[in-house]
Amino acid sequence: MDSIVVTGNGPLHGQIPIAGAKNACLTLMPATLLSEEPLTLTNAPRLSDIRTMSTLLESLGAEVAQMQGGQVLTLSSHSITNHRADYDIVRKMRASILVLGPMLARDGHAVVSLPGGCAIGARPVDLHLKALEAMGAELDLRDGYVHARAPGGLRGGRVAFPMVSVGATENALMAATLARGTTVIDNAAREPEIVDLAQCLRKMGAQIEGEGTHTITIEGVDRLGGATHAVVPDRIELGTYMLAPAICGGEVTCLGGRIDLLAAFCEKLDEAGIDVTETEAGLTVARRNGRVRAVDVVTAPFPGFPTDLQAQMMALMCTAQGTSVLEERIFENRFMHAPELMRMGAQIDVQGGTATVTGVETLKGAPVMATDLRASVSLILAGLAAEGETIVNRVYHLDRGYESVEEKLRGVGARIERITGQ
Ligand code: UD1
Image 1 (cartoon, rainbow, N blue to C red):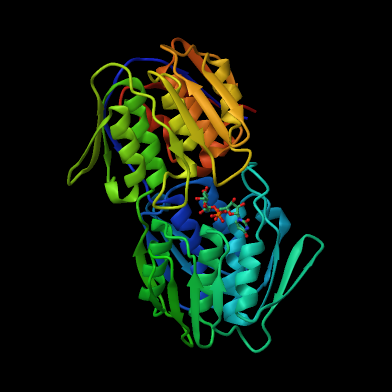
Image 2: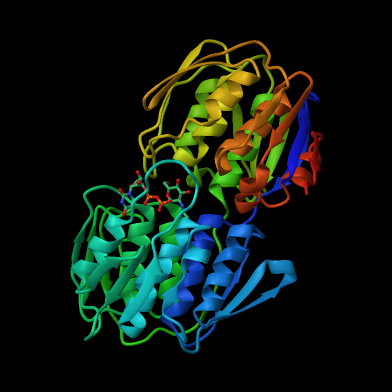
């Protein structure tokens, strides 16, 4: 298994290009199952999760053609030849559940394994299933699979989510585009990836209103056509690289970055004493005056502070002046990076869903273990700021969500290398 070696090397300067959003692409790709005509996605990120989704869609009968080294994907699902998404593929990635709504909406039946994914909590799929039931689906859970049927086709319904779920909103939205009649999704997720999906579906001929608000209304249509769509920039990759100059000092421009994708996060950086400037090129981030200030963070659905940036923000707070309290409200068990950061000299006290971080002047390089995708990159960020060498072991999660991480960081002056394992 590969490791990454990082050596603290002082302030960073230069530009980092931001890729298309993994999480948007993973929901746009299954939208191919809704139409006989091709869907072309530009600005796709080159990540192992995207390859996993391609393999899954191919197993269902879709054709996936890659151009420009994988930055352009053309997906064609002339017909769905297999309606069973197997455990062997689904267990690798939780977003696989997103094929359920589209298959059911198009052909009235689907069998999908219950998913796996990052080990950051129980992460059930009950909300996905309740949404489809509200549209008339008959569901049966057996042998670790969801067996779904809608013999006369799905019909419009009222989907009222008791809590905000990004994936369940996406599944419901896709399914509703081909359901008979009107579907109203209440307490919908408002993430930029949902807006991106709705915009793409509209290009395919779907009738959708209200994306980006709490209530999305969909008028079902008989069929959807093809479309070409550019994937929205990855706000989590953006936030991660914005933290690199924040933690090491220097000035870095994240090309393609936009404040509207990360307003709550940018406010916290401002509070911490980091300058963020929006220009035509992207977001320029600079730390000029000594140590950052400690700030408190509570994760929340969009437009709140993203849970997917909590681990990276904790890495910054480890060297801040003062004490910060980070509350994780989306996923239980999402502080697995804390003991690893403590191996580097961080002072962190975790009690349930709250971590209290007392900033230290410097972190010290150490061998550490990556436990999930965002934890992996938080350890790299900490390593960039530490004295000496940090070896991040088991980095396979990193390749699920970050394209060319070593090249991008080396481009701004970081000392980072990959050691390829057996
Ligand atoms: C998506 C993102 C993930 C991000 C998360 C929250 C993708 C591929 N992944 O994950 O990176 O961390 O949003 O921003 O887009 N829940 C239930 N029942 C369900 C579904 C969810 O109880 O049926 C709970 C989850 O356990 C969690 C909360 O709802 O506590 C939010 O999860 P959700 O928004 O669904 O996350 P994902 O879509 O899985």
